[in-house]
Structure formats: structure tokens, C-alpha cells
Image 1 (cartoon, rainbow, N blue to C red):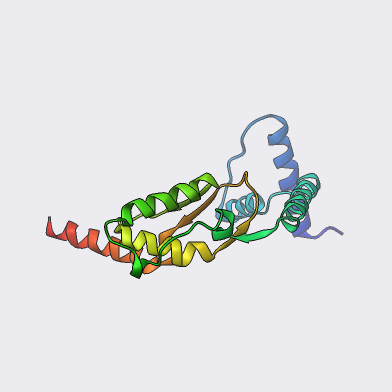
Image 2: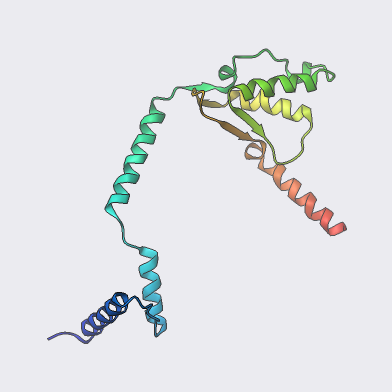
Length: 169
């Protein structure tokens, strides 16, 4: 003997198949049916082929990075001579900052910020923080450092300032 629930489910499948075969889009009748359809959509059918390809890509990625040698940014850009910020002549600051940015850029390293900071802070950030970071010793890879990733409170301060300015206007 077939249970009532099993019978209803098999009838639904038959109706669903017949509407799929005819190319018509089936309209759900009640909330429960809509929920079932959404659940099927969200879960989806796992495709073994996609899983295998994904796993293969992850393994290739791992292999590539396991062989990669890590090196400090300072060494990567050729250990350029630089003056500590507190000993640097303020008149030479702009030129020294430009020289460091060019050295970083030659090795495909970019230091970026969302906000506007003075040259002293940019120079300090590069020489005291970025130079100590380790990256893969791969000449082809582009690396970007974002100031606000290291100092998120600075980004919040900029947003607060914008809000205050909007309030004033």
C-alpha cells in the first residue's frame, strides 16, 4: 500500500515532468510548493565534473605557491638606501618618496591609499611598514598594498568627516 504522501509526491513529479517536457513554465500553486522550488534552486545539483575541476585548480594553485620563495619587500626592490624619517631633510622628502615609489613600481609593487595623506606619512608607511612585509619572489606578479588595510581607523575617520561635511551643507 502506498502512503498518501508518497502518492502526492509522485503525482507532483509527473506533473513537473510533463510541464518540463512541454516546454511550459510551471506556476507554483501554494507557499509550500514555492518553498520547495526555492530549496531545490538553492541546493542545486552538484556536478562531479565541476568538483573535480575545482579541486584540480586548487591543487595547481597550491603547487605553484609552495615553490614560491618569500622575500621582504625591501630586499625585493634591491635594498635601496633611505634615510630614516626623523633624520630626513623635509626639503628632500618629496624626491625621496618619489624615488622609493619608482623602486617599488619597477618590481610591480603599488602602495595605494583611499584617503589623502601627507608625504611624511606616505614615506613612513613605506619605510617602516611595507618594507617589512614578505611577498613571493616572482617578478611577474603585481602586488598592491592599501594604507587603510593597515590603518582601518583612518578610513573610518575620513568617512566620519564626509558625514559631518554633508551635515553642514
